[in-house]
Image (tube, rainbow, N blue to C red; front, side, top):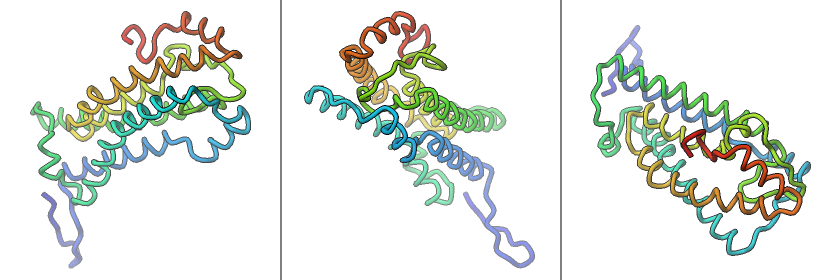
Length: 233
């Protein structure tokens, strides 16, 4: 629990090691999401260079938007839970949230090492997301293709076809590590993986159906057979 020490007659808030670790994790997660957000300027640049998104068949659009909303909730609800609950509670894990602590009880050194590794991993994924945005450039879009489509097969796209989803799933794993909590793993297994499994074929079909890049994307699928993790999926 938090406590106060008094230095030179002043009340100075002093945090326990766990509170400090929770604070570091909150900052790391917030910074990771800050790096991962494209921003309005990037979106405007994309539309100038590649045009607006091409409308898909209405039924497909509704399904794809619904799935997008589901996987967004699966990623952001756990993140916002930690980002709000911990600062409000002076970086002490609330009892209702502590019920989801990982069941493993390692030594203190291992415990803090795993949590610190999760913080480093989350920030690294944020930096990788910046690289993915730079590689994707004007072809970035939530759904479907742009008016002036162009196949992107360089950088991380030479390894997997949907690297943003790879990073989103990795973020859930690192979130579980940095907060020592299994809630993000439930969101990963129960929400993100099923949602991505449904959405990726929709996105790929939209690219295959596009007259300008359909053939190129068909060849790309043969060159890069993995959707999110090489040799796994």
